[in-house]
Length: 190
Image 1 (cartoon, rainbow, N blue to C red):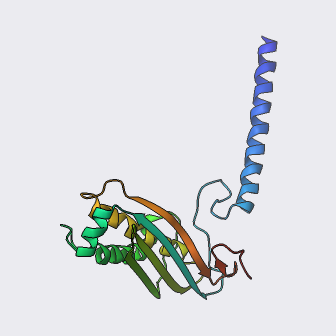
Image 2: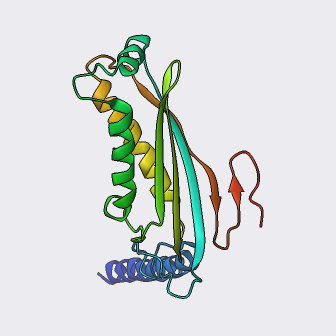
Image 3: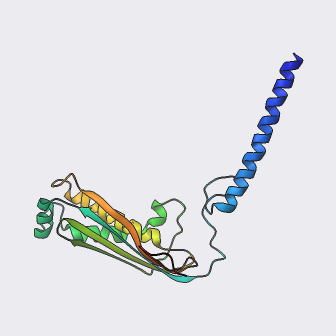
């Protein structure tokens, strides 16, 4: 019986040590991970001490489409209406609701959101630019605008082309804030 108690005590000591290591790991992670609190839970970053600055983000994507769908978009003959106009409006609406759709995003009073949807030879090109004067960046708003506009193209054209794909969804440029100016294909400049 004594051996069993010793064994149980050994397990208890190991468990206690594991709990200490885990607690230390959470504390270390909290220092490294900006969206994790001391308990290891996801949390919104406190931007209260950051300076308000002008911020801008530009994003793009392409929806690859069939020649038949391109022809129908060109003729504006789809049953659901004008694909390019509806996609543009969907992107604008999405950018304004980013904080509702992406966990832990701050609510931002957008100064401007522009979205373009253009028919090109084998794709619909989508571009967005978001601007804000705030304590945090506007990248997610620009990216969400492009993503939702692209999904709208797919929704509106799926009766003609079920093989559409979204390609090249990315940030093209970002400026403002302490991380400096970023242009795709280059290193960040400070």
